[in-house]
Image 1 (cartoon, one colour):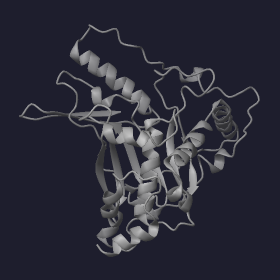
Image 2: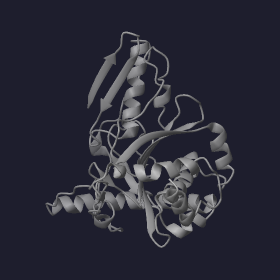
Image 3: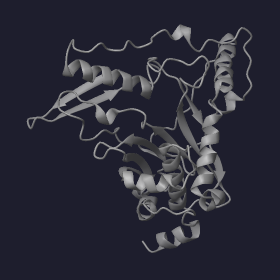
Image 4: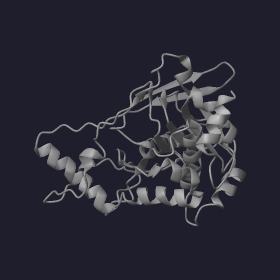
Length: 320
């Protein structure tokens, strides 16, 4: 982990952090930052929660390791990513930008999804539709989302939420583009919910056993990540920070005016974060091909049960 503090003559302070995911996931870093902020504001005045550090007490394989899922082709499959520089023109570069979705917008969106669905599921359904439409993907193609899922509370017995380490696995909701663009928000949200629900105790223990079996065979497991300057299209990758209160961190200066990650030149990657400007709102950090940004901005705040069709999008693009 590395931390950099930049102080400015105006009194402003920018804190930069980087951390290897082997050390900790988003939940761990949120725990660390909250404790750090409490200590800075009132040294010695708070009894800080102790992080759970015993990695040997969790993720223990069963006496007879056994797998029930094809983890080699789920978590460790080498995926093919497209270069965003294929045509050699700057127009294909990925551009990072931020969108703000107000509490009022979120409320209207949530009225379209089943009761019990989360803000994350509702907003992701919306953006999956809009980004796919803006990309002009063929209606016969399939699109999927790689969703990072915190598994602390999904395994039995549950891992303490203050565990400092990495307990993230991935869910992969998948739909035909035609279905995605024509189905209701409720239907798309349920596809996302079901994919995440599959990461249950049975799945997690199967994954742990898979690692133990591979270790016994001397196999080295390495998760494949997209390299910079690649495109995930027609797919997406999402990390949600909505459960982390980074927007409330107070190091004695008040809450932050903004919280975001540095530019990430991987087209199709995005993060959700609680808005620093409006409680209940959501900020979305997104990277898209410059070819698709204009069209996306025209439709991203339009709430429709059926997203704008690919043919209409191509017609709009042709007029640019």
